[in-house]
Image 1 (spheres, rainbow, N blue to C red):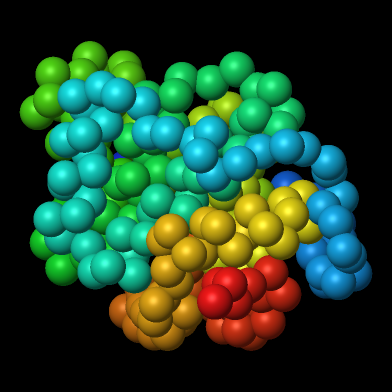
Image 2: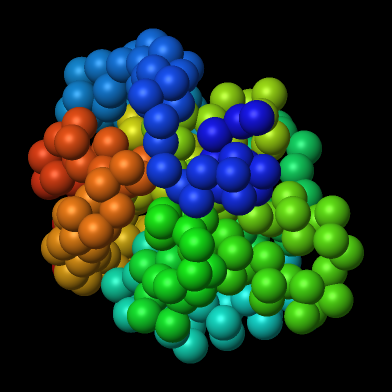
Length: 258
C-alpha cells in the first residue's frame, strides 16, 4: 500500500508510522540527494543543463470545461500568491513533460496542478474530518469536486492519488506520470529542484507572468503550523528536515527584468 495513495490515507488518516518514515527515506534519499547537489552546484551556470527552445507562449492550459472549472475553483478560495504558485507548478509540469517527451493526460495534469493545494485554503483545510494531512485534505476536496463535475470514480481516484502523493519527497516516473510531474514541478517552484534545466530567461518570464509575491512566507508559515497541528504528517517530516531553509535558499528565484 503506497504512501500517499487513497487506500493508505483512509487507513492511516495521513499519519506516518515509523515504518512509513523509513520507507519514504529509503525511497527518496538517493534521488533527492542527487537533485540537491545539482540544484546548488549548477545554480550559476550561464545556460540550462538541458538545452531546449521552450517558451512560455508554448504552454497553454487545455481548453476544456473541467480545466476552466478547476481554475475557477482554485481562484475562488486561494490567495493571489497561492494561485500563482499553482499556475507556475502547471507550467513546470508541462515543461518537464515536453522536455522528456512524456505521454500524459493533459487535462488530469492541469486539474491536479490547479487544485493540488486546496488543503492550504480555509474552506478545505478540514474538508475530510478524519484526515490529518493537508495534501490529503486537498485530494479529498479535489476528488469530491471532480465527482460533482461528472468524472468517473476511477479517474477521480486517480486525481486523489496525484494530488496526495505530491507531498512525498520523491515520486518516481513508474508511480504514475502525472503524479511524478506534479511532485517534480511543485518541488521545482518551491525549493528550486531541477531549476537548472531551465534557462534564466524562461524562469524570468514565468515569474513575471505569475509573480511570487509573498509565497515564501506563506508556505513556510503554513508548513510550520501544519507540523505543529499534525505532528505525524508528511509535512511535519519535511519541516523537521529543514524545509524552511530550502525555501529561503532556492537558488533559482530570478528578479523579473525591468
